[in-house]
Length: 432
Image (tube, rainbow, N blue to C red; front, top):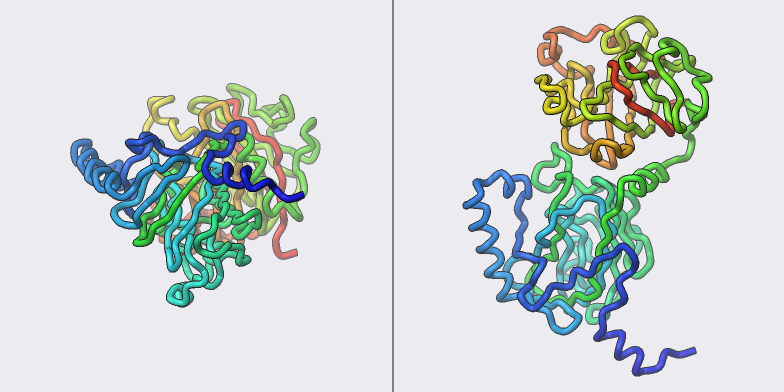
């Protein structure tokens, strides 16, 4: 059955009904909810003195108001001037928008102010040398050959027609659908400004102004809560993982069994107790996935290739720290950066600021291959290091870690008197 012509006309000029949980981001007449923005490191912007930052934003916004304007249910840019940025900073999101690009046009969407989900006229021969013939939706500023750099399929409608784009971001992980076809699947968006650092934990969403007129409509966004984000992260690459915890008992575990309990489907360290609870099995190279929940100031650790003897931080390959990011404020104690959450304890510091609020569950993936240790927290890689190549003089105690030559050992939890909880503990062995 064909859609009546008057309904097609209405759909072109009226905003779509906002789905439950989504907010409409279409600006008001004075661009309410938005400001000017640019290809500018959001961390650097936040680090500016307040007056300098305000002046920079005011400069961008004044220019943006000359080149961006709402027209009915659409947002229009001349393609000149700065980008348009949300006033609000976002973390994990489901963002949906329709756009209509001009012939030979080039645009994009910045996530946390990091460029970019690419949009262009794929029939423009001038863009083919840059990958334009492959289609829109790719993470164009990723390194050549990196996952997500190019879209997996060409899903664009021709310039002058409306295209529907959906972007889901969980930490650094980005998935993109264009016209209902997935073109990027759970790829890491690299930090364009400093690829040695992870993306900011939050940042504004930007629509790019890149020389050509673009029309946008049906801009809507939903912030993804932590539990949903954890499920999304856990669902990716799940093949081959086996559970280490049955959710009911400590079967398969040994060591300080009396210092741990099973509560609500989680392993919890008893308050005021400690010691290391570890697997009966030993592992060599592996990927470990789990969820953890911290109390304020909570402290524990993941024992990797543990010998089963005494202090897991030294009687194993490494202890991957599990610690409240606000431990210092909660406990009134200063810590070394190499003691922060996700760090290879005493050896290499992890990036901080990617935990969910106290009381929420966090999703973590730890990969150990040889001496290379990678830690991904809530979708963001916070540590990626080859411990065999780190000068021991840079370790906290100034000497080589005694367990670095271990090639296999147990996995465990190194308790420190706090009721830290773990659940959905699974492992995938590598090299077998």
